[in-house]
Amino acid sequence: MSPSPQLRATLVGGSIAGALDILFAITFAIVNGRTATWLLQTVATGILGEAAYEGGAQAAILGLAAHFALSIGWAALFVTVAARQPRILARPFVAAAIFGLVVFLVMRLVVLPLSAFPYPVTIFSKAAGLDLLSHVFLFGLPIVYAAARAVARKGP
Picture (tube, rainbow, N blue to C red):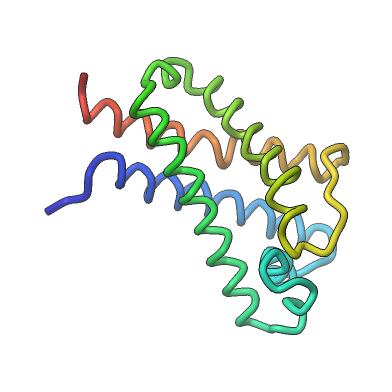
């Protein structure tokens, strides 16, 4: 038995979006003199706080798992909404831009401040601007296109 089109879209779209987003973040970290391990530990600070930096590879793996869990969660939300309101898929770039902006804002204004993330969160910086673009193009588009395929397979 194969998974439903919505489940497949959630898993495929969320995984692709998560992979592209984390590769962007790791690349940005490396360009700025950090390591991939540091970046993934930084993600894990949302759960562990600053202790993540002393957690080695295990904390980095936890950060990667948390990142993909969030990516798949966001994909599930979008796919569910798109299945109920397919007209939002009529303009995929607009849908990706709005979805990416919503994810960016919720992560920066709600999720990170409520987590154990130890740094001040900003939305007005060079890094935040690049993060926003990443959320629109690398995160939003794969999820929107996966949802569009799922809705098209489901039919009217």
